Image 1: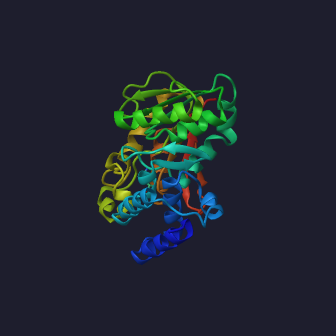
Image 2: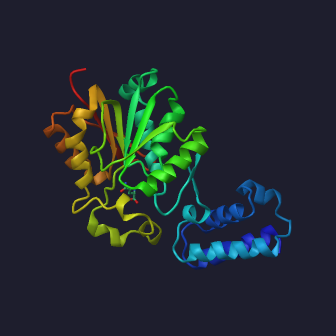
Image 3: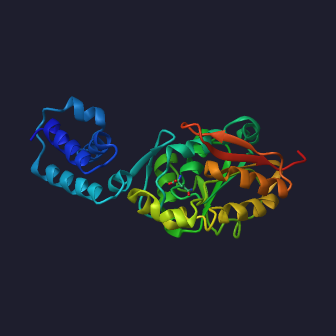
Length: 286
Ligand code: GLN
């Protein structure tokens, strides 16, 4: 069979099984099996696919049909234009989370992390996506990243090595939020788990295959966010910026938490779908 034929059959198979993005998924999986990209598939459309590659593609499709997400099957996910390694030990980086990187590179946060002495901490780093994107954009700043999961930190380390050319480019710290964190930062970012526990069961099967630790935010989704809000102050330099990803429905409650702790009136940042996705504030008395 040719690439075009095998691809077409896979699209139909995924579509008939109710997969939401059959063409995209069939293409990404086939490109990974054939070590090319989706444009490469089109260019080589009439080429014959070896038996071995056909077998590998069938196995990949079966995993997809079994509810696994494409990123875990191919072991990669693009975020901020960088190609991250992902495993089931980490949340798959979402396009929405690019809002967190954008917010960190904007206005008040910018000048703090642009100089040679900018210091950044990324909590709940997972694959390291936010920390690595920021280090990529601001190579002179010092970036620390923490996670409670040693398995996630191992993935973040691989990503730092592959994408920044140095496994030590990010200072990785195994820590339950601020427990093992010393020092003060110009910017603290976090994409903590924020899904209310009761909603976890209703998430798409792809999402339920991701680490619960990275998703489950407790009863109201705010368990970790509450701890970040109450723990961040001693770790922010005067004027230091705190940016957190959360669900748009949680922003009012988080605003109240931040104001009660004496932070400045928070600002919201919107994702591509127009939903409030990141909330940011700063430590007063700059
Ligand atoms: N945005 C993710 C989802 O809804 C949640 C990520 C998180 O809890 N940090 O699947």
